[in-house]
Length: 122
Length: 122
DNA sequence: CAGAATCCAACCGGATACTG
DNA sequence: CAGTATCCGGTTGGATTCTG
Image (cartoon, rainbow over the protein chains, first blue to last red):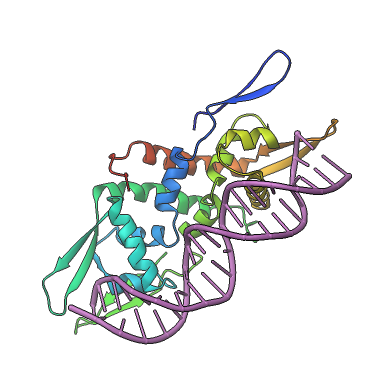
């Protein structure tokens, strides 16, 4: 994200360092911005939560989505999957320190969206 | 985002207040999280920028996307479109105070994505 | 220059059914 | 319980072409 717009004596514009795809903002957005991702992580900020409980907590998301986003979060090291030896088997998802650091970003997002001038009817 | 997981004496779980779709995080994400949206707003934090310059600054985005996201940002009051009476016509995009408030969120996102433990090969 | 219009392939995500 | 598998309509977004 260090693109610069320069201009020569003739007033011609050129760009050095265009903001290429893996720019930090886009990168972060692709990790935290997926549908339901924020909500899921949010619900894990306290105690570990089990799969079906999560799908109930995140109203509206299909189990397919929950599963997919959980894999995604795990792949990025934000959560940990923990299988409990019970019958029937139960699985807990736990937030990692790295995942916890993301909650700050999510909360900034939440606060921003909350205190917005109510013109977001669009 | 105020869902609660409760448990009765028999250990049965129930959820009150599931996290419904318009939860603040998701809301904010739908506004700032669209592809290229962050980058575009980021590049407007200084001086006003013109359309083609923007599409050059945000490397990889098609003009169609730039136009679409610009209208989106304008609809949400984050930027302003300003037409300059020149020949040929030129258009500037300017960030609004509200848009500027979003930069804080974007920067939190950027910093988080930057200082991450390098395991995001996935 | 600043877009709008069109086309189309790829992906997303919901519904449903099935499994260990 | 905790998923996976499959189907499938809707949306996304890039490429290209056209316009005032």
